[in-house]
Length: 362
Image (cartoon, rainbow, N blue to C red; front, side, top):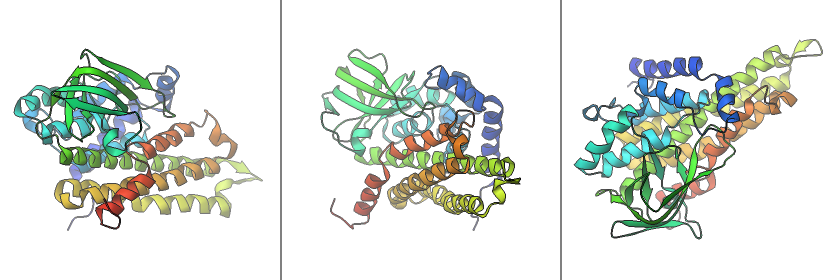
């Protein structure tokens, strides 16, 4: 049995990594953050040329027709480069919702455009993850009213996939009358998160967009966020090791000090086993669907905790430099922080895992 990546999977990840290293270095991330842009159109265009928007969309609709494991490898690479680009919502959750729950006409209308990047989609499903007072979307006879928070990849979206209070999914055009879009400011300047306010908004329900489809796209989104944390954490460890190898105190590189060695070793020991967890969660989504929700919960909750440990420890290895913009660690630190909370924080997700296993009542 093969437990590693295939040659084609490594080639996909390497191609995305090379592109981001050349076209989205840290200075470009800084420029995007300084301009208060929610994402980089140039990076998005380059990723579209590589076929990234269509990674999970079948070839019949113009996509690559790959699985969630390949999507997770892309997400890991985006996290490593802290790329200011849409992915989890726009290129995984939204296409999946239409693939799993859409009619033939909805699939024909949207999937080819999403596969090429000609159209952009965002996902509003936070109500299906955690109920908040005064927030929620109510559907009545094809019309939507209410508020949706924490819309993933909201900036410049042409289409929104919206979950109502029953968990059913609807397609909403960005220019629909009665729809107001509000950007939400978060700690992470490399991500676009928004709020939707709807008053009598015409929606196109997904015929198969019931609770199971919503559950599936949330599982997929959590796996993508876990993979993003994995990539970001890997980058922070590499930066900590590189800094410890060159920073000299008392005539010696600080990496020669036992305490610093232990900090770097503890980060690596905590993060490296997470790689197989994320890979298996992505594999299970396609090949062991009965395990998918539990594995997605495990991956999201565990990576959220390990990611926070790595982010803190890497910053500590850098000492005072770790808090400066010159080092730039804060971009990865904040990205991990937002990943931790999107689609449910670790406490909520672990509670959900307990329900799935029957340890507590539903």
